Amino acid sequence: MNEVELAKKVESRDHEAAEEFVREHYPAVLRLTLRLTGKREEAEDLAQETFLVARQKIGTYKGRSTLRTWIHKIALNQYRQWRRKRAPISLSDQEFTSPDSSIAAFETGHVLMNAMSRLSHKHREAFVLFEIEELSMEEVAHVLGVPVGTAKARVFYARQSLRRQLQGTTVEVNDELIHSSSNG
Amino acid sequence: MNSFTRHPMDEMIAREVQELRNPVSSGRMDQAIRIMQSPPATKATSVQRWPLAVGFATAAIVAAIVVSPLGSTNAYASELKAVGQAQSNQKVVYQKSLLFGGYKKPMMIMEFWTDHEKQTYRQTSGEGKLQVVIVSDGQKSYTYVAANPKSGMPESATVREDNSPHFSLDSMDSLLASKLFRQNRVQKKSCVNLNGRLYDLYSVGKSESHRYWIDPKTKLPMQREIDDAEGSIWKRDFYQYPGKFSESTFKPYMVPGLKYKAQKSLSLGNPQKVTSKATR
Image 1 (cartoon, rainbow over the protein chains, first blue to last red):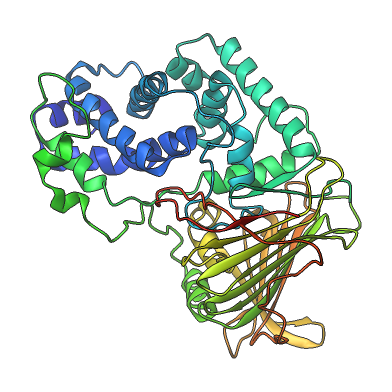
Image 2 (image 1 turned 90 degrees about the vertical axis):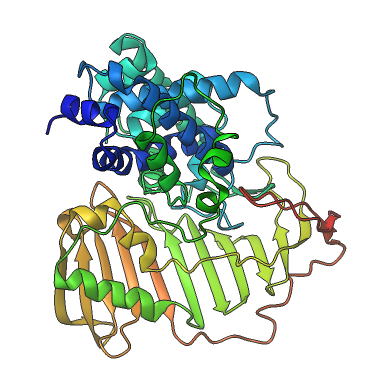
């Protein structure tokens, strides 16, 4: 069954197809919203919103992109709407902290999440889609609605900024800052 | 990982990215399935109202669903899972050294002392300078952060009330949940000599980049090494079971003249708990 057929089955309320669709794409959608927002509750809500919209629009899916790209685009739009609705948060308020542990060590993704929180929205979106969601640059461009060259540039500048930030490695334990020597 | 020019920080970024690619567990996938199985709404409604429609029972599912099941199916993979189980709830001392390819000394050394709810973490720089100490007795945690000349941050100490466990032993769990594990077969060599003792050596990844020396009797890992993309050792960990603790192991690190202050605990998904905060 190809993706257009799957979409048609979901549209016609085939329960098994709907479940297959969600099981295939929910993890990536949740991961995307979580990496973009850094907030578990908000990310879960955005994932649900994404599937509400997907349910409405699944009948319009014509196979011009993969379903993965298609739903990533919906999720990104939901995230952007959410972002516009809320007031900017200061760094001291930001919640890019690990939910499971107050110790932020390397290899928890915590260090990078903190650094990502300081990227511009455009750069963060591009970085998350390309590096974490592992979309191709063409898919990233499609989801962002920009030319491939622009998508590449955003990923490049995101990476450059992250390198600068991590150079004087900052490990954050909740709202404590812990600096480590990076010249050893 | 990408086509950009390699930079010294890229290795760290790659490691962190790898972690962020790991599946995220959720108890709300069933809600999404119901959404997709329902007739389309005439207008997208707010998800805040959706739970009322589908019932809060689903939303209240406590058991987290591990989103991505383990894909490695060979026998050695299941042996590693058993190692993970054996490792849990151990009284252990665990030292983790971060090395970057080409550097002779570790960039950072992290040590963990874990005795069930009592936990202590110490972080020192490669030069041996103490940077952080966190002691948790299961009810409160005491954090000492050394002054940092680069940032100008003052030496500080905080205490916060927090019943949740603070450090998870860097066990097999993270490996078992990783893409690396799901996409690669586990290799095993028996009777491998390490410092005069024989171990089972399990390895995962291209060029056996993740290596675990497992005690064949206790099924507990004794050493772990992880290579970076260049094939240099990025991290070397040592484990000691049962951990040996001195009396002072779980006492807050007290610096003369430095007072502990209460501090709010920022924790994603959990209500903030009031604690006590402090500096000199």
